Length: 233
Image 1 (spheres, rainbow, N blue to C red):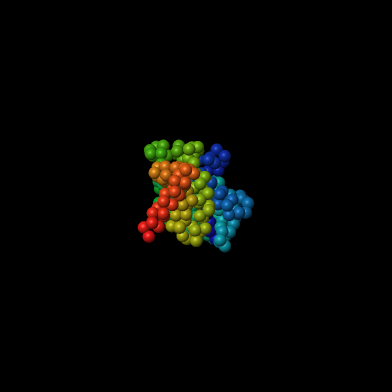
Image 2 (spheres, rainbow, N blue to C red; image 1 turned 90 degrees about the horizontal axis):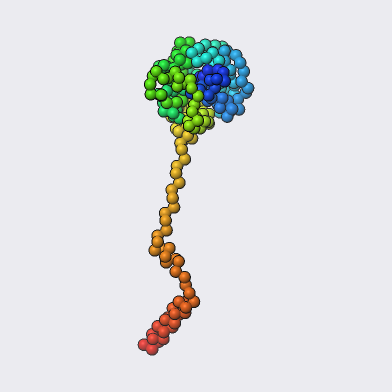
């Protein structure tokens, strides 16, 4: 069994925050792969499903970000899910907007949700880092992550959709394949190449009409040429 944890804050006032992209990804994963209904337990909302024959639980902790580890630890310990079988999906300041990176273990990088999980279960779980970009100044980070995505950030929905669509590769342990698939699915369409213009000379030649007079002159010339050749013989 694999436990997928989407990080975010509960409540409609936070639902579209950059900090809640983990919740958004969890919702799309459950929808796309036709999981069962959301249920409330273990200080969170969870849904069960099967992807490519593997049982998967998706959890959204309802403890607020800073205490996410409490919910994750309760569910993992109750169902005896090893930390190595946990995948945490979260927002990442140090990854470009619309990009995704996957790694196992490592530091929390200042992310309070990861810090809380680390304190309860250790750090040896996989992280799906969904890039939201950095505001450029560390003093602006709190306001930035707790602010809704701007309308101009049109990459959000395609990224969430791509993560859910490519998830079977991640589940199979193909992290490179997962990241590559997400990149392909979110790549902008290639511009269409213009058809080469037809050469002017060809157009001019094609536009010259063949008149009956011209045809007659050509036939007469051929007849005279044939008569001269007969005389020579």
